Amino acid sequence: MFVAAACSAEPSSAQQPRQAPLPAGQQEAVFAGGCFWCMEHDMGALPGVSSVMSGYTGGRNANPTYENHPGHFEAVRVRFDPNVITYRQLVDRYWRLTDPTDDGGQFCDRGSSYRPAIFVTPDQRADAEASKAAVVASGNVNGEVITPILSLGPFTEAEEYHRDYARRNPAHYAAYRTGCGRDARLRQVWRR
Image 1: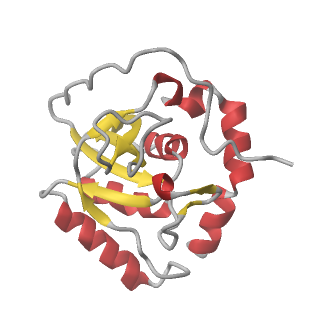
Image 2 (image 1 turned 90 degrees about the vertical axis):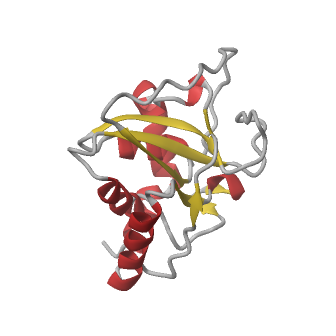
């Protein structure tokens, strides 16, 4: 029987690098949807997405780490080319990658740091709210859509051993994703 690792991996002593500046012509979006490994993997596969970084946001700790991030969400920062994929298209895709009816975590990962949320800048709020309203109106979700849309605050990059985890550890990631029941639950929630 598979026992979910709750998105944990062996720590390294590597220091966190400073956040790289946003490349010209790129935009950013920040989403929380359970374990950041899965969000990083799924968002990174979208055309127009140039990078996805795992990290922490939404809490008060100035220097969150995997071992110490009270109040923070595990989240991803998505950098994308708006000429290929728009912010609204990213938000529309985000919903299908999460269980927007569960505010206690996502799939087998339980607790406040695994809650889903969309973190927005003032310019992104209208698109995020419109996307959420469209999901609610569609009737395609088996349950009440409760994922919050929150103002974006500081985003701290996760430790090196969490970054690009699915690509670097494909067998462990596949076992984690299957054992966690992520895809099966998505089919139930989204009636597909």
